[in-house]
Length: 258
Ligand SMILES: NC(=O)c1ccc[n+]([C@@H]2O[C@H](COP(=O)([O-])OP(=O)(O)OC[C@H]3O[C@@H](n4cnc5c(N)ncnc54)[C@H](O)[C@@H]3O)[C@@H](O)[C@H]2O)c1
Image (cartoon, rainbow, N blue to C red; front, top):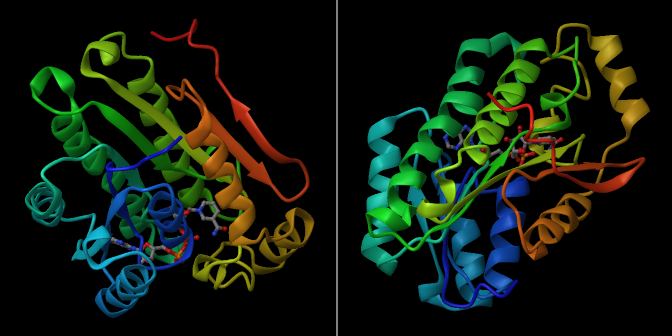
């Protein structure tokens, strides 16, 4: 899938998976808005992108996905900078059972809010280009995880929300596709506190789980993201990627939708 001349907005893109997804999109020709709460890291990321590509291909915008004003300002900034939007990756997330309220605000409500603004900006029947919304969930959005029950709840929510949109029969006339990514553990900062158990409920069990599942490189998740981009029909797709079983593109049965 060439993205030449397309525009993407990625939340939580200052570092980790969001940064790596942004690089893929840049490589494929898209211009990107790196939106994140971390200003210094985000600006450094964008500066490295600008050196590698060109100044006008990427910009940083400070955005706390829990604040509607920030989300609105980010979408406005993209429109101002590039005059269009084609793809939104709602990726920002944290893992900390001790901050469960905040975690639901970021991981679930942030994705909902980002998706709502994305729908309004992209929908073809209201003057947008149509486009793709990728929500970053987790393997913890598909299977129960007793060491991180709130994280799992937030990620199950993302899968349910995304699949519900994908099941919307009006999506075609809007020109929209919704899909989600569900990786197991990957080597980013979010692992700090999960691998030592300090941000989980049962430290020893959390460490056992990490040992059992292994930790993927960021590249292994990026490869799954690229496979998703290359699918001709992405709507409703749930991409899983694990250390043990690799990448699986799933199209959950929509017959059971209500
Ligand atoms: N790394 C993994 O093991 C793993 C596995 C499955 C799913 N995920 C998901 O992938 C996504 C990216 O995580 P990561 O692994 O790159 O971790 P990370 O900690 O490296 O990156 C998360 C990014 O989100 C940003 N962020 C946090 N709160 C924010 C807020 N309120 N507003 C805007 N940005 C905010 C952070 O500043 C950071 O740049 C998350 O949704 C995470 O749940 C990660």
